[in-house]
Image (cartoon, rainbow, N blue to C red):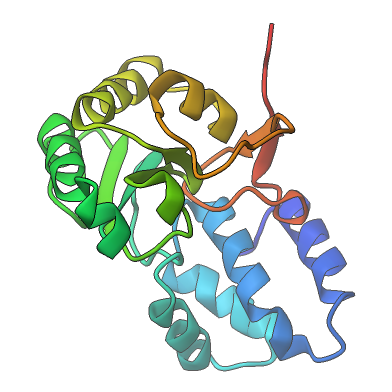
Length: 206
């Protein structure tokens, strides 16, 4: 397997940022996820070649961090925070609503490959609990019914990009603080939106 020319060009630019090749392993894992949708064995071998690590060393990194996915997770990854602040504000009910509406439990993807569901530890939005992310884009103050609406919207509309401000306006409630400056960029897949990785797109406001 070899990466596409576009991914190779991104990898070359990323490698220039790191005096030690092995230090680029995590950014290159995100590139591999963008290329294949998740971390395949071939993709991790490619990362190993770029970084000078062994495939086993690369997989040890990939399997340690929850944001690296070793199997297909669907077009939209819905992550429900179930840590203490969110739990006290009803996160268990939000999680149950997401699982029920999606038709799959934590750690699974629906049969159509559209929605994956997971519960996660603290995502840093305790003041706006309960909090949910879609492809790592945040929603604060969500209720169980809004969570159901979110899942239905994702399945029916299947937007090309996920933008936090748009999610908050559609499905959110009380925020931890005023976000002030509107965010117009969002995620194009179930990985964090970050320009150098090619995982970010501009919101369409037309």
